[in-house]
Amino acid sequence: MLIFTNSLLDCFIGDASVLWKRDKHELFPCGCSLKDGCGETCLNRITYYECDSTNCLLTQCANRQFAELEKRENFGVEVMKTKDRGYGLRAIRTFKPHQIIVEYAGEIISQEECKRRMKAIHKAKVSKSPSLSFYLMSFNGMIIDATRGTIARFVNHSCEPNCKMSKWTVGGEPRMALFAGSEGIMFGEELTYDYNLSPFSFRRMQGCKCGAESCRGVLGPKNYKIARA
Image 1: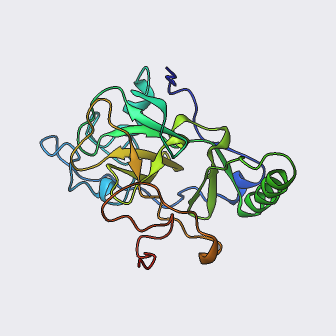
Image 2 (image 1 turned 90 degrees about the vertical axis):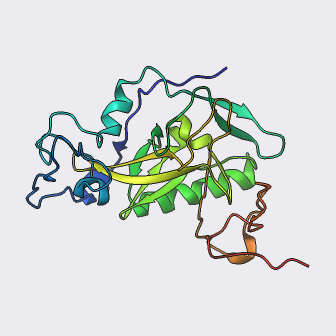
């Protein structure tokens, strides 16, 4: 059993820290009351900003899930071997609807560094390791490379997912995490989200093996579906 503790946060590599534009505009408190507790109508929540002392007058509220995640002793998930989709991730506890599960963290790199790494990976695939994988996620002009990142990189795709990968701004910096879907997650359930990939070539898209009734047939964008005989 592999259980990963929440010990890794995103780190900027190379010129990414210079290129990333931290929020320099004046922040205003979300205006939520203690009764509301920064629920679904919280302005910060709606715009995917986590509340903290700079943008929320409440000392405690429901929009501080990344802060709560950092206090968690372990993610409550483990790596599993699937039948035909390599490794995956499953829950070893229950999660409430829309609750944060695990952060997708790694090295924050520039677009240029991403291109350089992709070329190196392609070269390695051809010459040494055909099974070499990469875990890249776009975020506001930056790329999060989770190849050296958290356990979240093992989450598989599904055309009918039970989770959602969301991009947030926390303390002025880019963060990304996997959240439970509207029905929550049961103990032992495999975690999935829709990759919604934008392929380099539509003729070379990888086939999808999620098994969902509405499966698109390929790991491609949500509005794409292969023609079936």
